[in-house]
Length: 386
Image 1 (tube, rainbow, N blue to C red):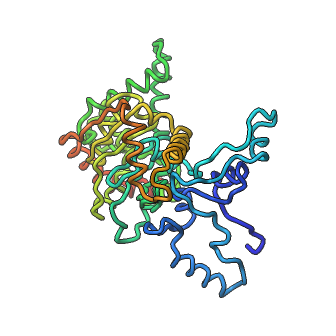
Image 2 (cartoon, helix red, strand yellow):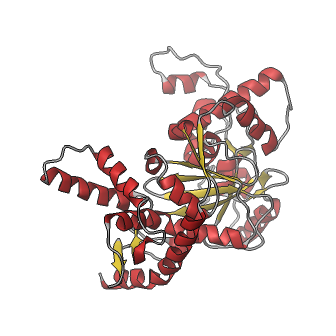
Image 3 (cartoon, rainbow, N blue to C red):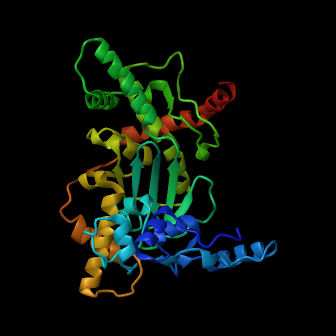
């Protein structure tokens, strides 16, 4: 520890190579150390506490001297240096002097790419893992092991429900069905099979017909499991059909996420709009509808969501450029400016599709989730026995 000169993230490291500045966007910084939503900088009380505890053991630099300077969206974060330009482009074509925005990681850029930076909005990203991020109106009242608290790129508090296991098990079953189709002589692409499998879910019973699916390829901290065992469980009187099987596989991908969202609901956290992105949502109207049932909130899918974090950081760079050009709100901090910019300039003409939760689906998923929660004992037994 005494030999450590600084601490940063991957985004912060790359930024320093490009500009020479040891800075970080507030969203990424909040993942390194708690941020005070009032000052939009590191929590001073907690910094002092860490320094006091460390000083009891060794004489070391203050933690604040090691951490990057915190910047919010729209603030100047340096320019591309000659060394940075040469690092990116050894041919010398790229010239120094380009302004850079504060660096952010995939969480912050994902919020921007889905216009989820104002209170009561959020986004769900479904891939190998799955997570939901909800912008808070106020701090949470208690600490919950299921919830990480970070911030938007403008510094507003965000509750993050992160699940290690996402759509991989669903994809594995779709791949198996694709092998069956090939064996039967059917010419079907993986996308065809995946789409047909997902669409079948809409024909299933609202509660999945008594089936349960656990997508745990790895451990899941939210449910207290250090290892995972993918499982399909049913009772003798369950209704095993393709439609119910497909629906429970989709439900299974959202199960742990829904348990985490239930914690936020008990905290009184409200969600007016949830933006979904990821491969599961390419098949129109299926995962989107069932996610709306799982979180009991409207779910929006748009074309820009597929662009991901690279597009999100480009939008943040454009925000810096436009704020600088207009000389508007110089030095101002807060989510409102960024939120208005996204609404009025980036997403004003975006093609968006919103699905409201269906009452029957909501009730069906609630029944499924009760079985899912109770059935975690089976998952724990499987990790011990297999």
